[in-house]
Length: 280
Ligand code: PXL
Image (tube, helix red, strand yellow):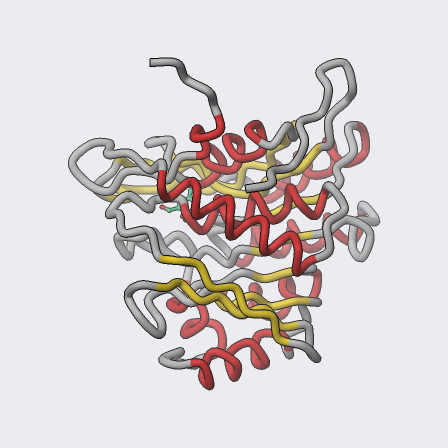
């Protein structure tokens, strides 16, 4: 696989910001994003939205950060360090979404810096990571600012009330998501079509692009969605087109799924560490 070139060490690397929650188990959220950024030679910046209390068995609790602290992290970084792309993950509440959207606009980032919105609603165990009352804010405030949105099938159902069961309904969902205002919508296929393949569909209002990769059979896929969005944002920071960035993100997460490892008694994380050359 042709991976992005690493930046020579003396040169300031590209910067990508994750606006997301912390996973105490280290598998998903900010921790997963920073691993992917680092493995791609990107300097990761963070606007933390919430602290989750979780392990491989699930999310026990979470604590939201005050909205001004979330907003100020974005302002502090973008006004000084500068970023070439960003992604959002767990945003927890409509108040935090409002603060992120307002800051994205007031800092002059809207339309200037690529923004990947992964509309995280729940953990893989079904534990909620977004208040249901915040879905309207995701649709009305966040999606119109997004370069790309990357919902999974559960999130598609919550956001546009479409049950994706085949190619036709996947296209219908892509149209409905795109109508909410993002430049591009990616409908991640999950277990669609067959258990052997993982088909994702990208739409920009005119053209459809299909991405199909062999499904990697593993119970250890914690953080897969975050990792796809982080790698895609990294590729956008490098100047890739959205279709090429998604292609790269999908290849990256496939490698991370192949390298996933068990952790604790539940589901282990996907691993961006496959890129390290570890001698036996
Ligand atoms: O994978 C989605 C996700 C995102 N962010 C945080 C999470 C999870 C899943 O558990 O905990 C903080």
